[in-house]
Image (tube, one colour):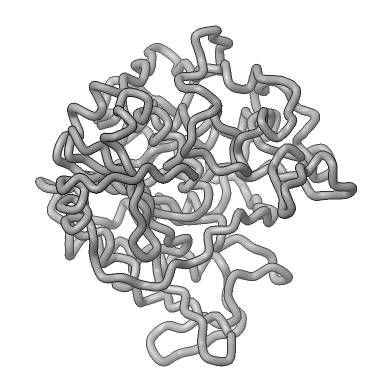
Length: 380
């Protein structure tokens, strides 16, 4: 990750405006655990989508991928990309995965305009909150805008579990906050990990004062027992060793929803919740490297249980949260994952390491998260 340094006093001033209470930097290592797909809940999701679609003229969630030679929207050598997602640099022989544009039925998504975005976000903060998939999206958004900002007028700063790209001339920041559960995960003295379903402030303190918040949280809740993200779950004084993941997720999301309702003003802050990004570990024997173009349709479209829970929680909230559904459009893009072209320790590439597992969870950049950000740009 490139970190452009400057001693400009404006940077220091903006840093202090952005800085909140410090905390230990938490790990954001890419996770590749298999997603648990559950029963269809299409009708319930569609009803919720229809209600939200009526608030805008375009339903971005339904459409098709079209090949567009004018894509990608930025150079693959963007200095803010993690090595794990620079697939062509890591040896991927094809590049067509960078050239697909999402076209919704009956309308179109405006092409991302970096200067327009920066102008609209002048003197504002936008923060993406979640796990490594959200970090994927943050890197995409930074790369979409950074080329129009002179080198001496941009920088990246770090504060606890957050990082911020600063565009100094616009006095704005694009930030990422590592909080895969949104609620708090604490490691005890004995090394045990306790997930606190009713505690959130250690993460939420970084969200205060932000103008646009984009959340996601699902993948870390869906790990199998062998790769569970916690050792115990705690709610109040009650400690649980085993708990239904769906129930735990709902309790955690309701803690998040309560914090949003009580602490944010919709006249001051816009809040988005992006749906979970699909994993394709189950296809092709656990690999996604054989795919080189989007699917035209899904033979068995499924809605994962966390998405059903999320819709139920959002319906119960007083705060108007915008629902950004990227599930189907992303599910068609098995070709967009790093697969065996993610960098590994020691400077080697996955395709050179025998029997190395494929990353069919995260996304090559440029790639699919650019479309998520084009939709976010349109929704803003």
